[in-house]
Length: 216
Length: 285
Image 1 (tube, chains in turn red, green):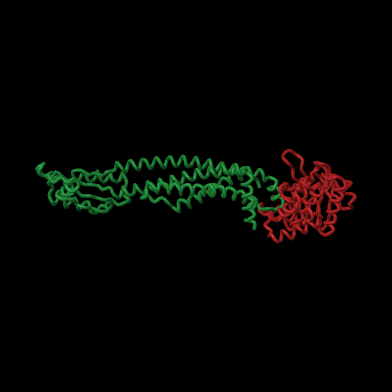
Image 2 (image 1 turned 180 degrees about the vertical axis):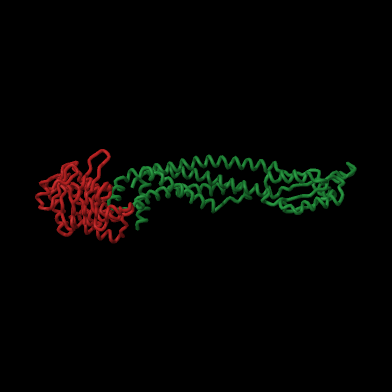
């Protein structure tokens, strides 16, 4: 599903990632664990094609970063779902519209949008709050809206960048349970966290990263 | 569906920054209105010049007492000239008759003891040769012929009109150009504002895989809508101006569908250009 082959990327001001090789297979739940500044977000940006490897290559499904053209990027991003620590919801849109937005901008039909958004809101347990504004929701609920938005286009791979980082312990636990449930139903997940304990408790594969390198 | 979505988005963006939209639409309306006035003025001025040119005749006055052979040879030299559209010979008698008809004085020959008017050829030139340089060249050439006294061509009025027309075109060019640039910049500013208020949406669109074309489309529409709205206001104003002018000068026909259509297309083009400038500077995808 996802393969990194000797991937390096250095920012102009230093840091970045060096010589990374790892894979995530279909249906897996993999943790990327490391302290802040270790390179987790850089890895996500490389997968999402916001950054391009300076050396090495990334294979996602049947696409190889070496042979990519710029115009392919949007179509590859449609196969990825991304969840951020700060949710990145649109405050002026309702829960329903925030999720539907991700489908509208890729040109889905109105009927399909309605059916799929209601389905995915049910999956994350927010059907009853579909007409609320993000500001009216708790942090955990907002994160679930963000997860619903990431899932709505049925991605190959869900990238979660510290999804529980801004949440209290109980809500973080619930968010993790939701992600595990989604994974058990077939969604492949790569989750970045600095919280080693949270990752270890889940008994999933962990990739440790420090100073831009995989340590184990 | 996605086009409908883009149009909706652009209208809502314009509503949100309505003060800026209002300013740019007004400025577009003013500049297109002036552009329309200039276009119509220049069009009519040009029509007038063409009409006057076709009316003005070149007169080749002949020396008194030239014999028939010389007259015939002048006619034979004039007839094959490609510049000439029509050629009429006015004899001394015909000239006198015309003169007397015009001023109604039958005593002129009695008064002077002879017919003072010369015989002449009256020439109308083909449209392609209605220019000053050409006329001057012909004048010089014909005046050298034996039997020809003088060649006249009334160019003064035409000259004055042409001069005015050239000034109008120049003023229109600079004033119109300045107004057009100002309205493009104002539209560009409105679009820049809506880009900055939609920064988060743009970021999310980018992340979920919207194509750059899809992201840009509402902004292009926003510019085009502003340009078209400005053109619409300008067209209404021109329509009423034409009605007022038509009331005082009924002989001038002032409604031009193609001027209105041209302004609409031009407005849409300028508006889209304003958007393009804003996106080029502020929207990196």
